[in-house]
Amino acid sequence: MRNFFILLLLTTLLLAQNPIAFAALGDVIYDNVEKIEKLKNIDEYEIYDKKIDTYVAAVQKTKKEGFALENGSDAVSRKAYLNKLRELVKTNDFFVRLVKSSYETAKKDENSRLFSQMINSGLLDTNRRKKEIINYYFAHQNDMNTTGLIQTYLDEDAKLRAKKEAQQKRILSKKEREAERIRRIRENDRREKERLEKKLQQELKKKKEEIREYQKEELSKTI
Image (cartoon, rainbow, N blue to C red; front, side):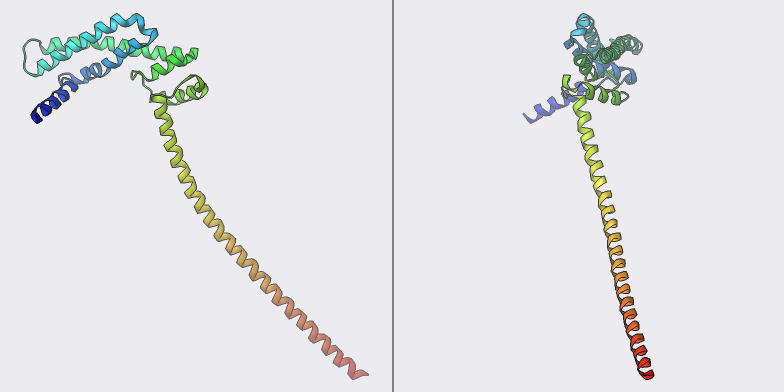
């Protein structure tokens, strides 16, 4: 039983991988095919259902041929496999461009449902558009749910805000400590000044008293 599960795990891992031959081209196609297939769930893409089904089947067949090529099968040549990838990538690029166009249209028409579907399709360069996506969300948040990319952005921003707040608290604490130190210095200076002024007043009072006594003595000598 244990060997069966190990074999099953290895098979699953193998199926999850892409053929190595021409991987720079093949990986783009194989990694996007499920995303393209999910476009069938979008109303605006209903007219492409047949095209998507045909494309998905062609990708699956080509992927099998890629693995067969790796295993030394002569059922398909490297050149024939490469040519199939080149044809498939044209369809891949078509849907990537279509998603980009739909995104722009949704943004312009303020179609929040389609906008959300496009940014969560996985076929749009959302990193480059992060700022405008966030801006659109805050302008239309009553019409959108936060599932998917938006929630990720909000979570990231929450972490950034928490980090910023913690940093501000540290800065504030440092400023408060410095302000408290300055307050103590000024308070000590004030007390020292008051002490000196009091001492000076006492000395002046004493001096005045001495002068009056002296004057009295001198006056008494003239009487």
